[in-house]
Length: 308
Image (cartoon, rainbow, N blue to C red; front, side, top):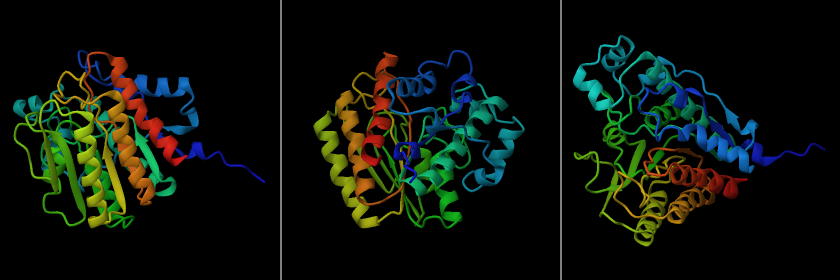
């Protein structure tokens, strides 16, 4: 009788271009895209067979969410200077290729999650990308594109996007502001970027200095209620670690242990309710790269512990 190692079913999207295609001067803290898999492989949390390299997102999938006019500007490198400034990176076709790989990784992860319960993208969470423009280091909105891909292909009917990055997922909120199929839930810093917030299905704006206990109680109660009321059949999780007290931009005060307990709340609820889930890493800007990597690595450790 063949014995199947269940932990091999954890599929994680990663590609060298996640980091190496970024412009010089923008590598820190983006070097986490190399350091996270290195750490997880070193400690034995994952193995090489857990990692897969995504391909390039098709234009048809981009157009499920983004306008044709915006896509043409990207392909023809005709962004206005003001549009490029809002993205924050010097725009190039290599950068667009990177973004298309990240987005395809989230779609691939969604299919793996349907089969195995959970899947992870070492990058992703590009939640500031609107339907017609990019912002905040985000060009294409990967979780929005993957959600529409699932629905349009009748793989699921109702999606909940749980965005726990410290910055509101303004692009995601705008894309699904009138949707009856995709619901957005964002817990974010009230006085943090973006300074103009869009309207999610549910927004919880947090005071500066919010600590573990307050944060986790709010998350637990509200996520429980959303799952009970909406009964989603798929969930995307934006697991940014810029909620840490050590983060240069976050202004909240979660500990690394509190951030790990946040992940446990999300994954335990998806597991208990048999909701397939894809986690994307989102932001993290602590002074010490070790803190960023440790907090992100905990997300993978918790997912493996609960699911496999």
